[in-house]
Each structure stands twice: as structure tokens, then as C-alpha cells.
Length: 295
Image (cartoon, rainbow, N blue to C red; front, side):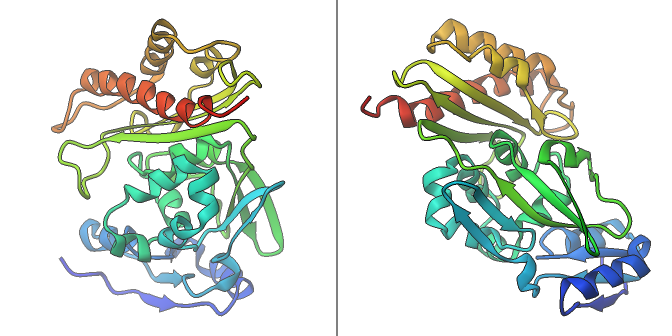
């Protein structure tokens, strides 16, 4: 199939972007990298009047890190640029892992974090990792801004909290605590560039003894229309030292709240079984990152 006809517009700044969205919001889509949008337009037959390209806006492409306030990523920042930032791999390892799994490097060079989020695919890799870090998003509409947790921003399959005239400005990720680790694990049948069938991200913080779990977040991906923050399951870890029995209870609690689909790739029950394994593996990796440190 061919791309449908549309008017391509590249605003010079966010002021012009806001004006375009105010005038054409119902008949326009934002393009940041195009690795998802252009494929959708080609295959779905959806017709748009305008495609607004924000990839050239420096205001939306920045990446900054501060030890106190954390990581701030512009919505148009390229995935590969995020991966190349040393602090991301060092302090936000689950996020780094989730980006590494996305396509080939050519895709990561073009694709943006904001696009991966706003596309709102249940199989997107970065949202579960970001949820594990309690990330927040900043939404802009002209001079007005509002913030919300990322887990609330993605509301379902291809559905976000964006309203008419709004766009995703940035993603903020709090600075991890000193004794903390994280990991993102996913399952694909064939590997390579296939989309994930199940995913889990875990972030843990340990007490001074480097054994007892002080805090934990478990995020589940691809097993519901939107990422799940498995708060009740994570709560079972707090104040405990890991054991096989504890992890089995935690992973089962995650499976119990998941709502995977049945399709040609796998049954819902099989996905739940894989989810249990991924939660335990991601926890083991996250915990090991700090458990071996000197007290």
C-alpha cells in the first residue's frame, strides 16, 4: 500500500507547534521519528490532513541529568541518543535495557522516546521500564503545562491522556536511591526485531544491610492494554529478604492481575506462565546489582 496524501508541516518552535495543534488538532498527527506513524498510515488506510514533524525542535530533543532531580528527556529525543548517555546505563539500567531491545540501531536512531510512549502500543518496551522508575510526563498546550505519572498517561491500546491541542513535552525520571538496582526482561519467540509477547521491569532499593528490601516497584508490559504497576505484588517484597517462596508468591500475584490476550502467538495462560518467570528473573538481576556491594 501507498502512503495517503497529507500536508507535511515542520514547525520552527513550540509556539508554532501549539498554533498548528490548536487549528488542526483533530485532523493532524505528530511525527517525531516516523518509525511507527508512517507504517500505520501506510497499512491502516487512515487519512489525515496534516502530519506535524517535531523532530527538528531542539526544545523537545534535549536530554539532561542531575544527581538530585534525576533524568529529563525531551519527547523528541532519539532512542539511540538516550542509550549513549552514560548516566542512563549506570543509574537507569532497566530503561537502557528496554531501549536496547527496540529494533535495530537504524530504528533507534530515528525513533524517539515520546513516539514510543504516545504510540501507546501494549507491546511498547520503554513504558514498563519507565513505570518502574515512577516516571512522570509533562504535557503542554501553548503556555499551559500539566504533569502526571506515566502509568496514568497511557490509558489503553493506542489511547493516551492527551487532549485536543496538547502534546507530550518531556519525560522526567526521578534519581534512583543509592542502594538501588533495576532490570527489564522481555520474551520474544524469535528474538530479533519481533515485538515482545510479555515484559516485566523491576526496580528495588535495599536497606543498609544490602539484603533487606526497602522499596520495590514492579511494572508489567504486554499483558494488558496499558502497562501495569503491580503495587500489591511489590508490597510483598518490602521488609523482606529474598527467598524462593517469596518470589513465587510475588510472581503469582503479578500473573493474577495480568490480563493477557489469546492470539496466534500464544495463549493467555502461557503468557501468564512466562510473566511469572520474567518477574523473578528481572528481580534477581535488579537485586544482584546492589546486594553484592560492601556495607
